[in-house]
Amino acid sequence: MFTFVQFSSEWKRLHHPSMNVDGDVAFFYEIYVRLHRLVEQEAAAFDEQLILFLLLYTENTVSIGLDGVYEYRYRSVGNVVSSWCESLDMSAEATSQVDRFVSEAVTKAPCSALRGWMTACVLSGDFSRLGEMLTWFPQEDQVMWRIFPDLRFREMMFRRLTGDWQTARQMLWADLAFNWCDKRGDSLAVTIAKQFRYETSFVEAEEKALLMEAAETLDAIHAEQLDTYTVIGRNNENVLTLRHRDGRVFQNVIFPTPVPKDVPSHYLAVQLVTYNNKTYISGSAVWLNEEALPIWNGEANWNDIVKKEQDAAKFTYFTTTFGKRISLYEDLYTVPEDPEEAYYADMGIYFDEPNIFDFLGGRPNGRVIYFGG
Image (cartoon, rainbow, N blue to C red; front, top):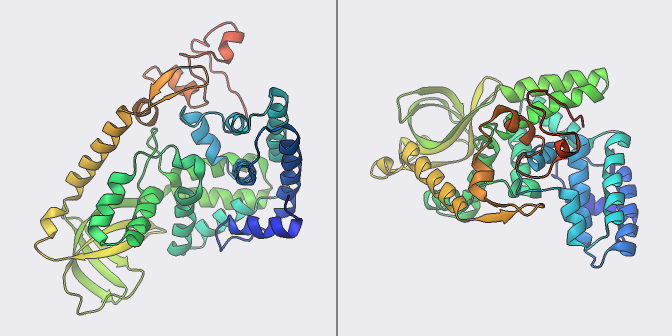
């Protein structure tokens, strides 16, 4: 078991370097100790990293509830706490104790360093800080890893474009942070904005105002997937005007590093993000020669990638807790056609499996029943 000093160091390592975890590290150490003792007593196996994973999930639940959104929305994720306990071969009673630990943490947490960091990044007006925060989740959040499509096809495209894996990975994280949308059509920024608004019901007035402002800022973000552009103007070495392949013009695009006047081409492939009424390069800019330009038809490339991702999902299956075999395609890309079923599916309640309504006398049939969190 970690000492408090050891845990503090490890907890800091597990978070973004710019995030100050001091505000609630003692709170999570207390949960860590309780979990550790329970696992030592009840688990057939032991894994320190699994305990840290559950702590990160608990922190996410306390702070923003992002993992919970996807946990309910996607059956392939399943019940995170139950799956965690099952992986350690814990008894039903021990599983109930773990569930209580997580629930108590949500109600007793004194503050949220994670939520504070996220809010500060959004409101900073600094695109690099916003990007660091949003890309952190697809890089590090293990729940999100399970709801992404097969990323090999995107990664290979970025790899062919950039010529090296490190830059390709940076562009992939930027794509997932700003352009990827879940099965409901929500980007990561939009989902966080919704969760910020939800959290305003449980915080003091000062933080409530900050969360509302951050939510509005996130909702106003507009992203353009990777495509080709032509430089048609230059304000200075960091600010250029670009014309999209389809003819749209983006004025005053801010580049992260200076662009030399003797750059060998006027053509480039980039991802753009508009934040706080300014447009930025997201990830890296890749300069193209005139011969390569026609190859990078963004619409055709993305249509091909999405088709490959969907085809791969159609041949992958998983089994739910109740034994139903489902294709990953159905889980990642479809929602029930019936509005009532779709409404409750977003709460993790599925009418094609045993659910709470079986104990309440049947389907709600138009009666909206809210299960508060």
